[in-house]
Every structure is written in structure tokens, then in C-alpha cells.
Image (cartoon, rainbow, N blue to C red; front, top):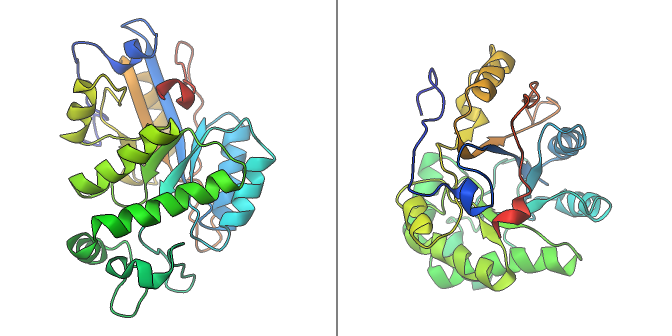
Length: 270
């Protein structure tokens, strides 16, 4: 994405916004908070962002130590749409987490020390080189099931630090369970996005925006401009709120949606 111009508009034959029942010129925006459950300072900021009307949904990680508190927060707020942020890496050396599945049942997901790989380029490459599909599926299903066992009903599945899964077969391992559970899957890269569109599934019509791609300086004004220039169709921004306590940097979106901009319910994409 060109940071100076913002997400590029595309014009498919039928926009996903139309598949969701909106007119061709409708401008729809999903603002989704990633990494809910990673760390308490992130969790508090995510809840505040949604309750203040800045974001419309979040993606829940179930591996970090604070995940249970995050799930309890969602139990108390059943109106918050959320997805399962499928996680195969561990972000903080000083705050490690492991798979839900017993380590001896998913050895291909672990580094030589028996830990999940870090989300560095080298760590992701090593994971993707050795991860066995059957073990990935075992862990993905464990993460989905623990959410269901908590009495929660997610709207979608997506990936933490692996884009559309990082490999075609890993994306397929999410699409399969999503169909079984009646969930949407967050797909935003080509060629997977085009393949999903050919199957008649709603995916983002325009380039996906990750808040990490924007410079901190002038970020609020940049968001305001991007909102003003938002193209027709279904758009999605991933944002990463935090309280800036040394682990989670403050990345609070400061601009609200202008008139004429609609934020759809993620459940509509099921």
C-alpha cells in the first residue's frame, strides 16, 4: 500500500458490499481491533475503543496468560462481535505462551527448545517451513473449541502475524472449520481474496489497512483523511489499541466516522 495515497480502490463486477445487501456506491468500513487477550493493557484499550464507538469488533487470542480474563470480558459484553485470532507464534520472550494442544501432539509447531516461534521474519519462516497440516489443524480446532466451551459465539476467524495463514494449506485449514461453525474468514491478500470472491464469498473490496503501516506522527490526521477518501465497497482496517505501558504502545484511533459512512455488523458476512 502506498502510504501517501492510502488503500487502492478496485472495481470487481459485484462488490462484496453488494453481496451484503448494500447499494453499489455504499462505503462500508470494518474497524477491527487485533490482539485482544494478548496483554491487559491491550485488552482494556480494545474494550474502550469498541464501547466508545471507534471500533466495531475485535479478534481474540486464546493462548496468552490474560486470555481467560479477555474471554470473561466478552461473556459480560455479548453484544461485542469478535473473531478467533488463530495464533501459532509467541510475541514476548518475557511473557511466553504455548499451544493449547499438548506439545507432544504438535511438535512441528515448536522451535528446538520446545517453544512457539517468535513472530519475527526468521521465526515465521522457520514455522511455515516445518509446520505439519494435521498438527496445525489440531491446534486451530483447540483454539476455536476453547472459545465455544466458554459459551462465546465468534463471528469470524483470522490469523495472528501470518496474514492469510502464510501458506495456502493453512488458510484452507481455517476455511474448513469456519464453514462447519458458520463463521466468516478474514481474507485480504491475493490470490486468496480473488479465489474467495469467485466462490461468492464477501471479502474486502479494497486494500486492507493495518494501523502499523502508518507513522505515529500525524496519525490522527491521516485517519481523518483516509475516512474522507474511503472508496466505495467493503473496506477493513486492523487497529492495535494499547495503553502504552511499555508492552503495548498507545495506538488509539482518534477519528470518528463521517456522515455517510456505515460500519457493518461482521455477522452479516457469515
